[in-house]
Amino acid sequence: MIDIKQLRENPEKFKEGCRKKGFAVDIDHVLRLEATKRQLQTERDRLRAEQGKVEKEIGPKLGQLAGQLKKAEGEARVALQREIDDLKVRPAGYKAEIARLDAEIAQMEPHLRDLLLAVPLPPDDDVPVGKSAEDNVEVKRWNPPGFDTAKSFESQRGFKPRTHIELVRDLGLADFERGVKLAGTRSYVLTGDGMRLHQAVLRYAMDFMTEKQGFTPVSVPVVVREEAMVGTGFFPAGREQAYHIPESQRQNADEADGKGAKGYDLYLTGTGEVGLMGLYADEILDEAKLPLKLCTVSTCFRREAGAAGKDTAGLYRIHQFDKVEQVVIGRADEVESRAWHKTMIGYVEEVLQSLKLPYRLIQCCTGDLGPKNADMVDIESWMPGRGALDSDGRPTGAYGETHSASRLYDYQCRRLNMRYRPGGEKGKGDTVFCHSLNNTVIASPRILIPILENWQNADGSVTVPEALRGYMGGRERIG
Image (cartoon, rainbow, N blue to C red; front, top):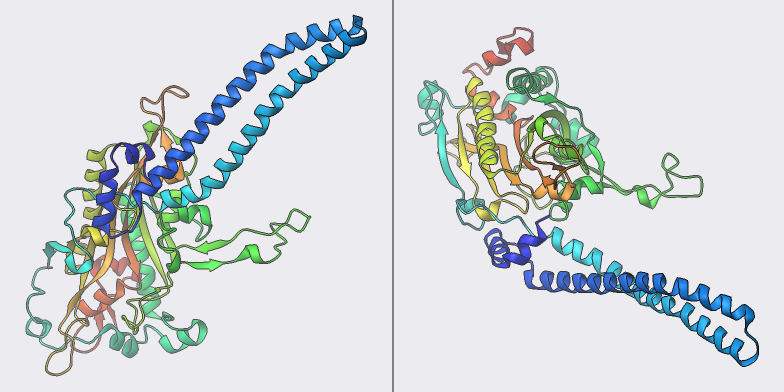
Protein backbone atom coordinates (compact mmCIF):
# COMPACT_ATOMS: atom_id res chain seq x y z
CA MET A 1 0.00 0.00 0.00
CA ILE A 2 1.25 3.43 -0.85
CA ASP A 3 1.66 6.34 1.59
CA ILE A 4 -1.67 8.21 1.60
CA LYS A 5 0.09 11.39 2.73
CA GLN A 6 2.37 11.25 -0.33
CA LEU A 7 -0.67 10.56 -2.51
CA ARG A 8 -2.38 13.72 -1.24
CA GLU A 9 0.76 15.85 -1.54
CA ASN A 10 1.84 14.62 -4.97
CA PRO A 11 -1.03 12.95 -6.84
CA GLU A 12 0.63 13.56 -10.22
CA LYS A 13 3.47 11.24 -9.24
CA PHE A 14 1.03 8.38 -8.71
CA LYS A 15 -0.99 9.19 -11.82
CA GLU A 16 2.22 9.05 -13.82
CA GLY A 17 3.19 5.82 -12.04
CA CYS A 18 -0.12 4.23 -13.05
CA ARG A 19 0.38 5.37 -16.63
CA LYS A 20 3.94 4.04 -16.84
CA LYS A 21 2.99 0.70 -15.30
CA GLY A 22 -0.23 0.33 -17.28
CA PHE A 23 -2.65 0.31 -14.33
CA ALA A 24 -6.06 1.94 -14.65
CA VAL A 25 -6.61 3.53 -11.23
CA ASP A 26 -8.69 6.71 -10.83
CA ILE A 27 -6.43 8.61 -8.44
CA ASP A 28 -8.76 11.61 -8.28
CA HIS A 29 -11.64 9.37 -7.18
CA VAL A 30 -9.44 7.81 -4.51
CA LEU A 31 -8.49 11.24 -3.21
CA ARG A 32 -12.11 12.45 -3.18
CA LEU A 33 -13.23 9.38 -1.26
CA GLU A 34 -10.35 9.68 1.19
CA ALA A 35 -11.09 13.40 1.72
CA THR A 36 -14.75 12.61 2.40
CA LYS A 37 -13.71 10.01 4.95
CA ARG A 38 -11.43 12.49 6.71
CA GLN A 39 -14.23 15.08 6.79
CA LEU A 40 -16.58 12.56 8.35
CA GLN A 41 -13.92 11.59 10.90
CA THR A 42 -13.30 15.25 11.75
CA GLU A 43 -17.02 15.88 12.27
CA ARG A 44 -17.34 12.74 14.38
CA ASP A 45 -14.38 13.75 16.54
CA ARG A 46 -15.86 17.22 16.97
CA LEU A 47 -19.17 15.78 18.13
CA ARG A 48 -17.41 13.40 20.50
CA ALA A 49 -15.56 16.35 22.02
CA GLU A 50 -18.78 18.31 22.40
CA GLN A 51 -20.52 15.29 23.85
CA GLY A 52 -17.80 14.91 26.44
CA LYS A 53 -17.97 18.59 27.29
CA VAL A 54 -21.75 18.51 27.67
CA GLU A 55 -21.67 15.38 29.80
CA LYS A 56 -19.04 16.99 31.99
CA GLU A 57 -21.07 20.16 32.37
CA ILE A 58 -24.47 18.60 32.98
CA GLY A 59 -23.26 16.16 35.60
CA PRO A 60 -23.01 18.72 38.41
CA LYS A 61 -26.13 20.47 37.11
CA LEU A 62 -28.14 17.25 37.26
CA GLY A 63 -26.95 16.70 40.81
CA GLN A 64 -28.00 20.19 41.79
CA LEU A 65 -31.45 19.83 40.20
CA ALA A 66 -31.96 16.42 41.77
CA GLY A 67 -31.37 18.00 45.19
CA GLN A 68 -33.90 20.74 44.45
CA LEU A 69 -36.41 18.20 43.17
CA LYS A 70 -36.54 16.46 46.53
CA LYS A 71 -37.80 19.64 48.18
CA ALA A 72 -40.02 20.95 45.39
CA GLU A 73 -43.74 20.52 45.13
CA GLY A 74 -46.49 21.17 42.61
CA GLU A 75 -45.65 23.14 39.48
CA ALA A 76 -42.10 23.78 40.66
CA ARG A 77 -41.49 20.05 40.87
CA VAL A 78 -42.92 19.50 37.40
CA ALA A 79 -40.70 22.25 35.98
CA LEU A 80 -37.58 20.81 37.63
CA GLN A 81 -38.33 17.32 36.33
CA ARG A 82 -38.79 18.69 32.81
CA GLU A 83 -35.43 20.46 33.02
CA ILE A 84 -33.75 17.28 34.27
CA ASP A 85 -35.26 15.24 31.41
CA ASP A 86 -34.13 17.82 28.84
CA LEU A 87 -30.57 17.71 30.14
CA LYS A 88 -30.47 13.91 30.04
CA VAL A 89 -31.64 13.89 26.40
CA ARG A 90 -28.90 16.25 25.17
CA PRO A 91 -26.09 13.62 25.13
CA ALA A 92 -28.38 11.14 23.40
CA GLY A 93 -28.62 13.45 20.38
CA TYR A 94 -24.85 13.46 20.09
CA LYS A 95 -24.71 9.67 20.42
CA ALA A 96 -27.18 9.18 17.58
CA GLU A 97 -25.28 11.50 15.22
CA ILE A 98 -21.92 9.93 16.14
CA ALA A 99 -23.37 6.46 15.52
CA ARG A 100 -24.59 7.59 12.10
CA LEU A 101 -21.16 8.93 11.18
CA ASP A 102 -19.46 5.76 12.46
CA ALA A 103 -21.73 3.67 10.25
CA GLU A 104 -21.04 5.84 7.21
CA ILE A 105 -17.28 5.65 7.77
CA ALA A 106 -17.42 1.88 8.32
CA GLN A 107 -19.34 1.43 5.08
CA MET A 108 -16.82 3.54 3.16
CA GLU A 109 -13.60 2.04 4.55
CA PRO A 110 -13.56 -1.37 2.75
CA HIS A 111 -14.11 0.28 -0.63
CA LEU A 112 -11.42 2.88 0.04
CA ARG A 113 -9.02 0.19 1.26
CA ASP A 114 -9.56 -1.84 -1.92
CA LEU A 115 -8.87 1.25 -4.03
CA LEU A 116 -5.69 2.07 -2.11
CA LEU A 117 -4.47 -1.54 -2.38
CA ALA A 118 -4.83 -1.27 -6.15
CA VAL A 119 -2.61 1.83 -6.45
CA PRO A 120 0.81 0.62 -7.70
CA LEU A 121 4.12 1.80 -6.33
CA PRO A 122 5.48 4.36 -8.83
CA PRO A 123 8.57 3.11 -10.67
CA ASP A 124 11.90 4.76 -10.03
CA ASP A 125 12.76 7.54 -12.46
CA ASP A 126 15.72 5.63 -13.91
CA VAL A 127 13.61 2.63 -14.94
CA PRO A 128 13.11 2.61 -18.73
CA VAL A 129 9.54 3.32 -19.81
CA GLY A 130 7.84 0.54 -21.73
CA LYS A 131 4.60 -1.38 -22.10
CA SER A 132 5.68 -5.02 -21.72
CA ALA A 133 8.61 -7.42 -21.50
CA GLU A 134 9.26 -6.67 -25.17
CA ASP A 135 10.59 -3.27 -24.06
CA ASN A 136 13.01 -4.62 -21.45
CA VAL A 137 16.69 -3.74 -21.86
CA GLU A 138 19.70 -6.04 -21.72
CA VAL A 139 22.36 -4.51 -19.48
CA LYS A 140 24.96 -7.25 -19.11
CA ARG A 141 25.96 -10.59 -20.58
CA TRP A 142 28.34 -13.22 -19.18
CA ASN A 143 29.72 -16.30 -20.87
CA PRO A 144 31.94 -18.98 -19.32
CA PRO A 145 35.44 -19.37 -20.75
CA GLY A 146 35.42 -21.12 -24.10
CA PHE A 147 31.77 -20.52 -24.94
CA ASP A 148 30.00 -17.65 -26.67
CA THR A 149 26.21 -17.48 -26.95
CA ALA A 150 26.60 -15.38 -30.11
CA LYS A 151 27.97 -18.46 -31.87
CA SER A 152 26.23 -21.76 -32.51
CA PHE A 153 26.49 -24.54 -29.95
CA GLU A 154 27.55 -27.00 -32.65
CA SER A 155 30.42 -24.84 -33.90
CA GLN A 156 31.87 -24.66 -30.38
CA ARG A 157 31.08 -28.13 -29.03
CA GLY A 158 31.15 -30.20 -32.20
CA PHE A 159 27.61 -31.58 -32.07
CA LYS A 160 24.01 -30.39 -32.22
CA PRO A 161 22.56 -29.95 -28.73
CA ARG A 162 19.69 -32.06 -27.46
CA THR A 163 16.82 -30.30 -25.71
CA HIS A 164 16.30 -30.88 -22.01
CA ILE A 165 13.16 -32.85 -22.90
CA GLU A 166 15.27 -35.27 -24.92
CA LEU A 167 17.95 -35.45 -22.23
CA VAL A 168 15.57 -36.20 -19.36
CA ARG A 169 13.84 -38.84 -21.53
CA ASP A 170 17.04 -40.58 -22.61
CA LEU A 171 18.66 -40.39 -19.16
CA GLY A 172 15.52 -41.24 -17.21
CA LEU A 173 15.55 -37.97 -15.25
CA ALA A 174 11.82 -37.19 -15.35
CA ASP A 175 8.48 -38.83 -16.03
CA PHE A 176 6.03 -36.39 -17.59
CA GLU A 177 3.35 -38.94 -18.45
CA ARG A 178 2.91 -40.17 -14.87
CA GLY A 179 3.12 -36.60 -13.57
CA VAL A 180 0.22 -35.60 -15.81
CA LYS A 181 -1.68 -38.75 -14.78
CA LEU A 182 -1.32 -37.71 -11.15
CA ALA A 183 -1.88 -33.96 -11.33
CA GLY A 184 -2.87 -32.87 -14.82
CA THR A 185 -1.14 -30.60 -17.30
CA ARG A 186 2.20 -28.92 -16.55
CA SER A 187 3.02 -31.66 -14.04
CA TYR A 188 6.05 -33.93 -13.84
CA VAL A 189 7.91 -36.41 -11.65
CA LEU A 190 11.66 -36.14 -11.23
CA THR A 191 13.29 -39.56 -11.08
CA GLY A 192 16.70 -40.99 -10.29
CA ASP A 193 19.52 -38.61 -11.10
CA GLY A 194 16.98 -35.95 -12.06
CA MET A 195 15.79 -35.81 -8.45
CA ARG A 196 19.36 -35.99 -7.18
CA LEU A 197 20.41 -33.05 -9.36
CA HIS A 198 17.32 -31.10 -8.27
CA GLN A 199 18.17 -31.61 -4.60
CA ALA A 200 21.83 -30.83 -5.26
CA VAL A 201 21.18 -27.37 -6.73
CA LEU A 202 18.78 -26.47 -3.90
CA ARG A 203 21.23 -27.56 -1.21
CA TYR A 204 24.11 -25.81 -2.96
CA ALA A 205 22.16 -22.53 -3.24
CA MET A 206 20.98 -22.70 0.37
CA ASP A 207 24.48 -23.39 1.67
CA PHE A 208 25.88 -20.61 -0.52
CA MET A 209 23.49 -18.05 0.97
CA THR A 210 23.63 -19.18 4.59
CA GLU A 211 27.22 -20.35 5.03
CA LYS A 212 28.96 -17.96 2.64
CA GLN A 213 26.72 -14.86 2.63
CA GLY A 214 25.50 -14.98 6.23
CA PHE A 215 21.76 -15.20 5.56
CA THR A 216 19.58 -16.79 8.24
CA PRO A 217 17.89 -20.01 7.09
CA VAL A 218 14.17 -20.06 7.83
CA SER A 219 11.36 -22.49 7.08
CA VAL A 220 8.04 -20.91 6.12
CA PRO A 221 4.47 -22.11 5.57
CA VAL A 222 3.44 -22.49 1.94
CA VAL A 223 -0.27 -22.45 2.80
CA VAL A 224 -1.17 -19.01 4.15
CA ARG A 225 -4.08 -16.72 4.99
CA GLU A 226 -5.26 -14.08 2.59
CA GLU A 227 -3.74 -11.36 4.78
CA ALA A 228 -0.25 -12.65 3.95
CA MET A 229 -0.93 -12.50 0.21
CA VAL A 230 -2.41 -9.00 0.44
CA GLY A 231 0.34 -7.81 2.76
CA THR A 232 3.13 -8.90 0.43
CA GLY A 233 1.43 -7.35 -2.60
CA PHE A 234 0.50 -10.54 -4.45
CA PHE A 235 -3.18 -9.69 -4.03
CA PRO A 236 -5.27 -8.19 -5.46
CA ALA A 237 -3.42 -7.94 -8.80
CA GLY A 238 -2.08 -11.51 -8.84
CA ARG A 239 -5.05 -13.33 -7.36
CA GLU A 240 -5.69 -15.31 -10.56
CA GLN A 241 -2.24 -16.94 -10.30
CA ALA A 242 -2.78 -18.42 -6.81
CA TYR A 243 -4.36 -21.72 -5.87
CA HIS A 244 -7.28 -21.13 -3.51
CA ILE A 245 -8.42 -23.41 -0.68
CA PRO A 246 -12.00 -22.27 0.19
CA GLU A 247 -12.06 -23.42 3.82
CA SER A 248 -14.71 -20.83 4.70
CA GLN A 249 -17.22 -22.76 2.62
CA ARG A 250 -17.14 -25.85 4.79
CA GLN A 251 -17.18 -26.72 8.47
CA ASN A 252 -13.65 -27.08 9.80
CA ALA A 253 -13.40 -28.98 13.05
CA ASP A 254 -9.87 -27.76 13.71
CA GLU A 255 -10.92 -24.10 13.47
CA ALA A 256 -14.43 -24.32 14.89
CA ASP A 257 -15.25 -22.72 18.22
CA GLY A 258 -17.81 -25.37 19.10
CA LYS A 259 -20.68 -23.22 17.81
CA GLY A 260 -20.47 -24.12 14.14
CA ALA A 261 -17.89 -21.47 13.22
CA LYS A 262 -16.31 -21.80 9.78
CA GLY A 263 -12.62 -21.63 8.92
CA TYR A 264 -10.87 -18.99 6.84
CA ASP A 265 -9.73 -19.37 3.24
CA LEU A 266 -6.13 -20.34 2.52
CA TYR A 267 -3.83 -19.91 -0.47
CA LEU A 268 -0.79 -21.77 -1.81
CA THR A 269 2.17 -19.42 -2.13
CA GLY A 270 4.03 -18.89 -5.39
CA THR A 271 7.27 -17.91 -3.63
CA GLY A 272 8.96 -18.17 -0.24
CA GLU A 273 8.96 -14.37 -0.20
CA VAL A 274 5.38 -14.43 1.13
CA GLY A 275 6.31 -16.42 4.21
CA LEU A 276 9.59 -14.63 4.88
CA MET A 277 7.97 -11.19 4.77
CA GLY A 278 4.82 -12.24 6.59
CA LEU A 279 6.84 -13.46 9.58
CA TYR A 280 7.29 -9.90 10.88
CA ALA A 281 3.88 -8.41 10.08
CA ASP A 282 2.57 -5.97 12.71
CA GLU A 283 5.94 -5.86 14.49
CA ILE A 284 8.33 -3.06 15.47
CA LEU A 285 11.80 -4.37 14.66
CA ASP A 286 15.00 -3.48 16.45
CA GLU A 287 16.93 -1.09 14.21
CA ALA A 288 20.21 -2.48 15.54
CA LYS A 289 19.32 -5.87 14.01
CA LEU A 290 18.59 -4.45 10.56
CA PRO A 291 19.01 -5.49 7.88
CA LEU A 292 17.42 -8.89 8.38
CA LYS A 293 18.92 -11.26 5.81
CA LEU A 294 16.61 -14.24 5.39
CA CYS A 295 16.71 -17.27 3.13
CA THR A 296 14.33 -20.18 2.65
CA VAL A 297 13.78 -23.16 0.41
CA SER A 298 10.12 -23.90 -0.23
CA THR A 299 7.76 -25.57 -2.63
CA CYS A 300 5.95 -23.01 -4.77
CA PHE A 301 2.67 -23.19 -6.65
CA ARG A 302 1.50 -21.12 -9.62
CA ARG A 303 -1.59 -21.59 -11.75
CA GLU A 304 0.10 -20.05 -14.81
CA ALA A 305 -3.24 -18.48 -15.70
CA GLY A 306 -3.11 -16.84 -19.10
CA ALA A 307 -0.10 -18.93 -20.19
CA ALA A 308 -2.02 -21.31 -22.46
CA GLY A 309 0.15 -22.48 -25.30
CA LYS A 310 3.40 -21.19 -23.77
CA ASP A 311 6.15 -23.71 -23.00
CA THR A 312 3.63 -26.48 -22.42
CA ALA A 313 6.25 -29.23 -22.77
CA GLY A 314 9.12 -29.89 -20.39
CA LEU A 315 10.20 -28.24 -17.16
CA TYR A 316 10.10 -24.56 -18.05
CA ARG A 317 6.54 -23.48 -17.15
CA ILE A 318 5.06 -25.75 -14.49
CA HIS A 319 2.57 -25.53 -11.63
CA GLN A 320 4.82 -26.76 -8.81
CA PHE A 321 8.51 -26.19 -8.20
CA ASP A 322 11.04 -25.57 -5.43
CA LYS A 323 12.86 -22.32 -4.90
CA VAL A 324 15.60 -20.91 -2.71
CA GLU A 325 14.58 -17.31 -2.03
CA GLN A 326 16.51 -14.44 -0.46
CA VAL A 327 14.85 -11.51 1.31
CA VAL A 328 16.38 -8.42 2.90
CA ILE A 329 14.42 -6.21 5.33
CA GLY A 330 16.27 -2.98 6.00
CA ARG A 331 16.08 0.63 7.05
CA ALA A 332 14.05 3.21 5.14
CA ASP A 333 16.97 4.44 3.07
CA GLU A 334 16.86 4.53 -0.74
CA VAL A 335 20.64 4.49 -1.05
CA GLU A 336 20.85 1.35 1.10
CA SER A 337 18.02 -0.31 -0.81
CA ARG A 338 19.72 0.34 -4.14
CA ALA A 339 23.00 -1.00 -2.81
CA TRP A 340 21.33 -4.17 -1.52
CA HIS A 341 19.62 -4.66 -4.87
CA LYS A 342 22.99 -4.76 -6.62
CA THR A 343 24.45 -7.01 -3.93
CA MET A 344 21.62 -9.52 -4.16
CA ILE A 345 21.94 -9.66 -7.93
CA GLY A 346 25.65 -10.23 -7.40
CA TYR A 347 24.92 -13.31 -5.28
CA VAL A 348 22.96 -14.84 -8.17
CA GLU A 349 25.69 -13.97 -10.66
CA GLU A 350 28.24 -15.72 -8.44
CA VAL A 351 26.06 -18.83 -8.27
CA LEU A 352 25.54 -18.93 -12.04
CA GLN A 353 29.22 -18.29 -12.73
CA SER A 354 30.18 -21.08 -10.33
CA LEU A 355 27.93 -23.38 -12.37
CA LYS A 356 29.49 -21.96 -15.57
CA LEU A 357 26.08 -21.13 -17.04
CA PRO A 358 25.86 -18.29 -19.59
CA TYR A 359 23.41 -15.60 -18.53
CA ARG A 360 22.36 -12.01 -19.07
CA LEU A 361 20.85 -9.29 -16.88
CA ILE A 362 17.64 -7.69 -18.10
CA GLN A 363 16.47 -4.31 -16.81
CA CYS A 364 12.69 -4.57 -16.70
CA CYS A 365 10.75 -1.65 -18.10
CA THR A 366 7.96 0.11 -16.22
CA GLY A 367 5.23 -1.96 -17.85
CA ASP A 368 6.85 -5.21 -16.69
CA LEU A 369 7.40 -4.27 -13.03
CA GLY A 370 3.99 -5.26 -11.69
CA PRO A 371 2.23 -3.26 -8.97
CA LYS A 372 4.71 -3.65 -6.12
CA ASN A 373 8.18 -3.04 -7.55
CA ALA A 374 10.01 0.25 -7.88
CA ASP A 375 12.64 -1.58 -9.92
CA MET A 376 13.22 -5.15 -11.07
CA VAL A 377 16.05 -6.94 -12.83
CA ASP A 378 15.54 -10.36 -14.40
CA ILE A 379 18.37 -12.83 -14.85
CA GLU A 380 18.04 -15.06 -17.90
CA SER A 381 20.12 -18.19 -18.42
CA TRP A 382 21.15 -19.46 -21.84
CA MET A 383 19.26 -22.58 -22.90
CA PRO A 384 20.55 -24.23 -26.11
CA GLY A 385 17.29 -26.17 -26.51
CA ARG A 386 15.12 -23.05 -26.88
CA GLY A 387 14.75 -20.44 -29.59
CA ALA A 388 14.25 -20.38 -33.33
CA LEU A 389 14.78 -23.56 -35.37
CA ASP A 390 17.58 -24.08 -37.87
CA SER A 391 17.26 -25.71 -41.30
CA ASP A 392 17.24 -29.14 -39.66
CA GLY A 393 14.41 -28.18 -37.36
CA ARG A 394 16.68 -28.01 -34.31
CA PRO A 395 16.60 -25.11 -31.77
CA THR A 396 19.35 -22.52 -32.10
CA GLY A 397 19.31 -21.46 -28.44
CA ALA A 398 17.77 -18.60 -26.48
CA TYR A 399 17.78 -17.03 -23.05
CA GLY A 400 15.04 -17.94 -20.56
CA GLU A 401 14.21 -16.25 -17.27
CA THR A 402 15.51 -18.11 -14.22
CA HIS A 403 15.74 -15.34 -11.59
CA SER A 404 14.14 -12.03 -10.67
CA ALA A 405 15.43 -9.36 -8.26
CA SER A 406 13.04 -6.72 -6.93
CA ARG A 407 13.36 -3.45 -4.97
CA LEU A 408 10.12 -2.46 -3.20
CA TYR A 409 11.07 0.29 -0.70
CA ASP A 410 8.28 0.44 1.94
CA TYR A 411 5.47 -0.91 -0.27
CA GLN A 412 5.26 -4.35 1.35
CA CYS A 413 6.25 -3.23 4.83
CA ARG A 414 3.54 -0.56 4.90
CA ARG A 415 0.92 -3.16 3.95
CA LEU A 416 2.34 -5.56 6.54
CA ASN A 417 2.70 -2.81 9.17
CA MET A 418 6.38 -3.70 9.65
CA ARG A 419 8.30 -0.87 11.27
CA TYR A 420 11.34 0.16 13.28
CA ARG A 421 12.11 3.13 15.52
CA PRO A 422 15.11 5.19 14.30
CA GLY A 423 17.64 5.71 17.05
CA GLY A 424 16.77 2.44 18.67
CA GLU A 425 15.28 3.91 21.86
CA LYS A 426 12.51 1.57 22.93
CA GLY A 427 9.16 3.29 23.21
CA LYS A 428 10.49 6.71 22.16
CA GLY A 429 10.07 8.55 18.88
CA ASP A 430 8.00 7.85 15.80
CA THR A 431 8.25 4.55 13.98
CA VAL A 432 9.21 4.23 10.32
CA PHE A 433 8.22 1.54 7.81
CA CYS A 434 11.06 -0.77 6.77
CA HIS A 435 12.26 -1.33 3.20
CA SER A 436 12.30 -4.77 1.58
CA LEU A 437 13.97 -6.52 -1.34
CA ASN A 438 13.83 -10.06 -2.71
CA ASN A 439 15.59 -12.19 -5.27
CA THR A 440 15.56 -15.78 -6.46
CA VAL A 441 18.72 -17.70 -5.62
CA ILE A 442 17.75 -20.89 -7.48
CA ALA A 443 14.42 -22.15 -8.80
CA SER A 444 14.32 -25.81 -9.75
CA PRO A 445 13.59 -27.73 -11.86
CA ARG A 446 13.73 -24.77 -14.30
CA ILE A 447 17.44 -24.26 -13.55
CA LEU A 448 17.99 -27.91 -14.56
CA ILE A 449 17.25 -26.90 -18.16
CA PRO A 450 20.40 -24.76 -18.65
CA ILE A 451 22.46 -27.15 -16.53
CA LEU A 452 21.52 -30.20 -18.59
CA GLU A 453 21.65 -28.44 -21.95
CA ASN A 454 24.91 -26.54 -21.42
CA TRP A 455 26.73 -29.44 -19.76
CA GLN A 456 25.62 -32.17 -22.19
CA ASN A 457 28.15 -34.28 -24.06
CA ALA A 458 28.20 -35.70 -27.58
CA ASP A 459 27.46 -39.21 -26.29
CA GLY A 460 24.23 -38.05 -24.60
CA SER A 461 25.63 -37.93 -21.08
CA VAL A 462 25.73 -34.82 -18.90
CA THR A 463 28.75 -33.61 -16.94
CA VAL A 464 27.92 -32.59 -13.39
CA PRO A 465 29.19 -29.04 -12.71
CA GLU A 466 32.08 -29.14 -10.27
CA ALA A 467 30.23 -26.97 -7.74
CA LEU A 468 27.50 -29.62 -7.45
CA ARG A 469 29.59 -32.77 -7.30
CA GLY A 470 29.87 -32.71 -3.52
CA TYR A 471 26.07 -32.78 -3.39
CA MET A 472 25.93 -35.65 -5.89
CA GLY A 473 28.11 -38.06 -3.93
CA GLY A 474 31.19 -36.99 -5.86
CA ARG A 475 29.75 -38.06 -9.21
CA GLU A 476 31.15 -36.28 -12.26
CA ARG A 477 28.71 -37.50 -14.91
CA ILE A 478 25.11 -38.51 -15.44
CA GLY A 479 24.60 -41.26 -18.00
